[in-house]
Length: 124
Image: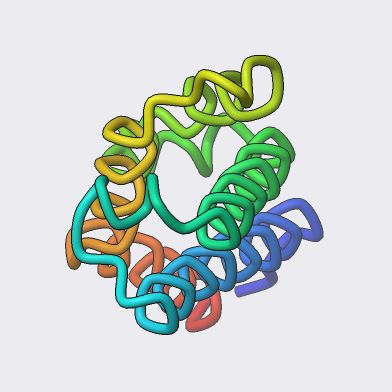
């Protein structure tokens, strides 16, 4: 079966999103972030996580609606909300929200879902 160019772009984009999630995981590990308070007290971790979320949101906008339809767990994580807060109101970011979003992104459900899409598309 021939994979369309648009489907290949979705796979590439999802791989980028997984890379940004990995960046957040590495940041949390490096700075030993275990709570929103930890995140709130570590400026470099704040910058890293909010930038990863911003990059992820921009990547997500490139996905076709059909691709978004098959990643509902990821789609329910409100990265757009976090991106808007971080980009437009950075001085009053609620790091409880950012921490919660990061934890959801790093969760097994999101990772399994995104990796499943990649494996299905690659096997086609």
